[in-house]
Length: 393
Ligand SMILES: *Cc1c(COP(=O)(O)O)cnc(C)c1O
View 1: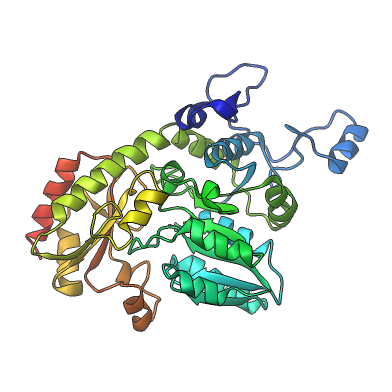
View 2: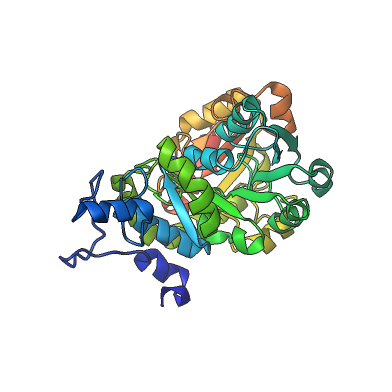
């Protein structure tokens, strides 16, 4: 039945389990373990754990299971495994399937911690990683080879909002026998259906739009039942990155409004991008739905909306950008995104501080670049705040 439901119905109902009390809201099963009626029942469950049977919260929990089923349903994957953070999801998706001697190709424009896993962790354990300009399909073609086990990329890069062609990169990867793992955080599960475009595994930081209210860290890996249960679960249940039931309950509550929030935030993001475009105090204004975005057509093809993020260059570099940030009133200086509260970030000195200058230049992270995560406030109020702050640069 729930297979035919549209996204907004699934976001409210899919995965719900009710106890014998018939509670309306999803219950938080704050329990680490589960009681077996008999020793034989315990033995049987360790041999084969059935649907709605649980052993230990590190392996799974009824509240966490509700969240996993709900996100898998809207993502269009057979299964999902929830993790303690987005980074735990990225790390497990890669580490669980790779071994020494394997080769991975990754786009270069990555969230700092993703870069750390690929550049430091995987290499330390003997996995070879080739970084490419993810927007250049010839680079992907040249980099894959027999022995390439996975390709990894963020479908919209942080912070310069480059779009990677999921369909084309998936074709290149699959022809080489590699699995396609996509970090889809910026695109959101509402605007992007990465699996229908060829991705095999999709990971989210649910800390972002899924919670959407800046309360809890979380993550999730979505994929085939085979990948989730045979590859990811054995790794995760023994290494301990499980999502807590309380966090899963927060995420379930976030999901009920996910579609509404993402659409309202995307409306405002585009309105703000248009209001900023052409302002003499700014250089580039980057939003995938603006016609001058280098991959405007690809963005329109690959996503139903341009997303909730934008970026712009303040003329005058770091000093001017700091004066601008310090003058903001409604918009907060922080580094989360996808939150109900609008958030401005200066990537060069915070999220991407660690990158050497030549890498920053390569990725377009200039000293005047500001990233804006558009929240749920009134768009006119946000534009007013941005304009008065620009007067201070
Ligand atoms: C935030 C983020 C992560 C990491 O998620 P956490 O929940 O903070 O661990 C990974 N990838 C992208 C693109 C992100 O924005």
